[in-house]
Structure formats: C-alpha cells, structure tokens
Image (cartoon, rainbow, N blue to C red; front, side, top):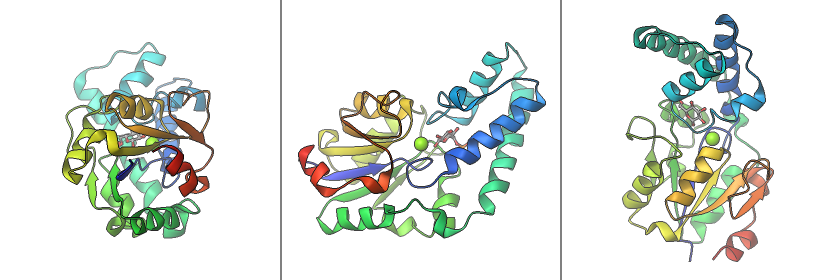
Length: 215
Ligand code: BG6
Ligand code: MG
C-alpha cells in the first residue's frame, strides 16, 4: 500500500529544469563546449558539481578544483537570476490539486530535491506548506542516482520505503527511487524513464486511479 508520495522538484513541480539547462548552456558556451538538450538529460537530478564534471567531460576539458568552484558559483548566480523572475503561477498545471488529493486520502507528502535552491523555489511558488517533509541538496552526501535522498525522506516521514511512491523526471532520479526500493512514476519520455513503474507526460496528468493500480 502506498502511504507516502515523494516529489522531485525541478521538472516535476515546475519547469526549473529548463532554467538549469539555460544556465549550464550559457556556461558551456563561454567554455566553447557544445551542449544540447540531449546532453542535459545526464545533468538532471545530479548535484551541481557532478553536472559541471559532465559538461567538462563533454568538452574534454580539465580544470583545477578552484576554477571549477568559480564556474559552479557563476552558473548558480545565473540560475538564481532566472528563478527570481518566476511567478507562483509557473507551477505545473494540476500539481497543487494532485498534492491536495493525495493528502486528503491520508497519505503523507515529501519533497526530495538534489537542489540547494529548493527552498527558494518552494518559497517563490508559495507551496512549502504542501509538504510534510523536505529534503534538499544541503542535507545529503550523495545525490541521485544514490538512493540516500529518498531513504532520508522516508525515514523522516516514518514510512517504510516499500510504501513510498516517487515522482521523477530524471533518469538518475528514477534509478535512485528503484535503488531505494520505492515505486516510481516517471514524468517525461518513456524511452529515458523506462525503469519507472509508469511514465506520464505531465505530473498533473496523474490520477488517483493510477495510484491505486500501483498498490
Ligand atoms: C536537481 C536538478 O534538482 O538539482 C539538477 O535536476 C541540478 O539539474 C541539481 O544540478 C542541483 O541543483 P542546485 O540548485 O543545487 O545547483
Ligand atoms: Mg528533476
């Protein structure tokens, strides 16, 4: 029985995944590295520094730790600039209603995002109070595909992992949910997210009937 639903943030609740892409693309351009939306799939769900590693690998570029940290700060400043212009109505259609419905059926709701900006995004959308538990990039040692973030959310909710359902748009995130022993709804392309139990196009498309079939 599903007793808790754990949501990823970027790309599941709001299209901040696109702002991450724009900021990384801008950085890659400065470094003379070609970086496409296809490449960007590898960055989804993973930490800021791991994302930078992947971009540098794509460009066969090796930089000092100090330089990498400088670049990561720069990318984050751009990302924060982009999200500061965000309005609460940028939340994906149907997400608030879905969370309310889940809660009204007695299930717990958590947020598990690798992002260190998660709290800022939740505040911008005015939805922090929709979650019983929030675990973000400042609270974990290993980011997705490691299951740590989901296991931490389940422990804080006091619900066994096997009774948790995760919503994820990232390949690394689906892998993390599976590794945590949880059920998973993939949000996006079934080619990329095929390891999820079910794949939907948009978070708001998900219905309670689908949830019941996952029990
Ligand atoms: C994840 C995103 O939610 O957070 C990744 O999917 C991002 O693309 C990661 O790199 C870390 O985010 P931040 O905001 O801490 O740089
Ligand atoms: Mg995501």
